Image 1 (cartoon, rainbow, N blue to C red):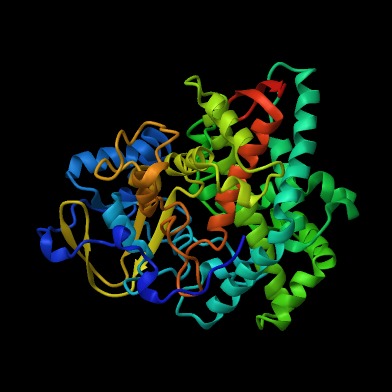
Image 2: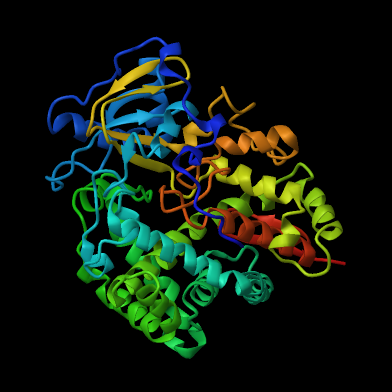
Length: 483
């Protein structure tokens, strides 16, 4: 992986992803309502988590208002989120959604999960980079540090992925001899935790048996307690609403887990931490907590959501996709797999992109209007006021029929050919288009490119090791070794 130079602000959104001139579209008042105080947000919260679920929540309102832009409330809300304003403007087509990446129009200060922000205690009372707006002086330091972490680990990234993936697959083969459909979720997360510690922090988990065995579970608990008020886990209602979505959970519930990982990274990741201090002007505490957030929240958390969707798309396919993947990965890329190898595999990369289109690991993106401006959708323009919060639900945005043919269908080769390459301008999973460039001038994910390359590497290795794979989003039912 290589990190490109910082682009000028005008290149942050590609021309194809930029909003069209608002003067070409009729000006319309933003439809929708926030309802009565307390009652409106509570009603929307129950629809979102319980009665409709997120997909239907947004779809029914799009149909009701005949608009992909409308006002609504998004949880968390009443009763114990007194400082959280749930009022949002939903932006649900590619044109309106692309405004979220225009740093002249919007700001990203403290809006990772909308108005709700977990206690800073979860990150050692350090406000980590993901909460910074690009105008804040500290943003450039932390973003540069994050990009440097990825650059320094690039040399060992591919071999660490493959060696640790083989350990996981050996484990799954052994489990298959004992069970018809063993779950791969925890083995996958252990694989992720081990290789991410090595490539991002330079930390070898074998030096700490407790971390090696349970580090991934510690991160799971740390992530879960922060995000419980904002996600549905499908337990019996109304228990979920009463106990998970009504208040924020305190840090002390996972303080032991976080401190264990903190101490491990502090001891084993000294070289990375030192660069954060000497080269990027961070304090040691800032360097460690930002490193932990990149490792635990961004990388481990993102891959833990994304990879099961990718495995499911491949392992449950009955259209002959696996034969095509097997043929491509065995004919291209040479004898040794690496990032340069998978760049030659158009179908493999397209499958990764299509999975990200349909199931982005972070479904909701937020931004706050930096000033009054006109926002354009596919068919209308709307006046947005300074300070209003915009929210895009990517699962609908990237099924925009104005951009994608058969938008609800999984088409493995969608992003191949010249037309497919053009569609990458609308693949927004990384807080920017896939054709964009992460820099200190924007909020696009620093690991945008290495995420897709890593996923492609995993797919390629699977089909060099196996002739076929059967399973779903949580378990494997059959692995046929390559002949």
